[in-house]
Image 1 (cartoon, helix red, strand yellow):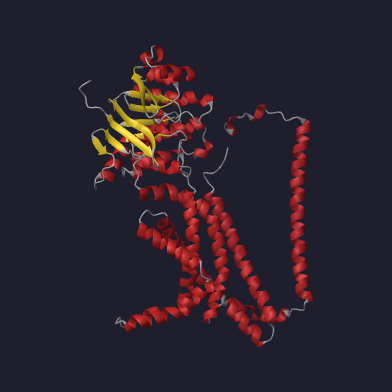
Image 2 (image 1 turned 180 degrees about the vertical axis):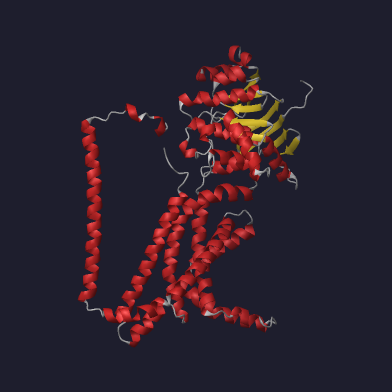
Length: 287
Length: 253
């Protein structure tokens, strides 16, 4: 049963088996080598394409710092929005699993409404429709409320992205919670734990492992969707790239550059995702 | 002994699943302090359901459950009810067929989880008692291993220690050896035997006939949601009165 009960000194692998083992290792090495070569060729092809179509690299280098300066907004909006989404998704998932009909219906309606409408529309809603609601409320006698309902572009963007991704992630978190075997809940209950204790100590820590990969995926998607706050005139990377590109009639250069910057950011995020997953996998070691 | 109040007393327990699936049909059971009761029966006869009714992992549809003085009437819903259920769960330990150890915690963390989270014990206190228990089940060297690195028999012994850490009055065993490879059964049964000898009140659903014969004070045969025959093991095994008991024993012996 346990791998460590086998005595290594008693093992004698026959030569023909050794040959097969060596072959296997050789094949793995070959595969890795070919994989790396393929990636390099792909990279070269991409760069050649960019040169062939005659991109103005000097122009790109000149404007790089200006575009990068907008990266702060991208990072700020993404991080705050994903934090909001995480909080909303946990509340949403608990709501979706709740036996209280009021809570359950609110959570279900939230997910359905948000997932059923385009993010683009939602962003405009937060930015443009909310002040109108404020105005209407003011008309009903709640003086001073309109300023509360009139959001600047960045808070509106964070709310829109956070609320939208929160709805998608609600389903991810709910699925993660439901993937934990019923026996775990029963064992916790048999110890006398309350539902809250069971969720916090037993179910959630295990569900996290299931949830982390899709949530990282959502985060990567959100970093790119944060470009939509440019619609409200925020000077983030995409907005800057478009402005500069149009003015100098070199939109392609700017677009390629901003695409590359997003790509690099996502590669970094992917690296951290892998690290977190490795960390979460402890206790999962198979014999 | 006869005058003593029973530790566990079930009266007229009925369990109906879904619409009309009548699994338990008016079960009575009385277990005295320190007694070991083994419930035998074909699969689907309702024995696991009965055991799970004792600590309310399954809500009985009708009947009364009493554990160490805490009484709960099925179907009754007053404010104190959930408190009473938690009370009964604290007084009973349960071991499952599939162990159900918490995979994200080491053996030691599994054992101290109940005392620290539920009983609000100090961690250092819980750890030192957990170490005693690990020693008692013979797994001191597995203290910091995760369940996935333990054999089935070792996992079940940790699960027993986890239950015992709550200092329960009653231990419930739900087919604790059924998921084990044959050579690992003995180590778990041995722990259960010692527990019985040390005076723990035990209700076990098991197919381990040796355990039933050598350790049980009462053996109860269940079929179709009710008792077929109950009595001391010598009587049940050597001298069964009911035809159905004989048939069942012929199948498993």
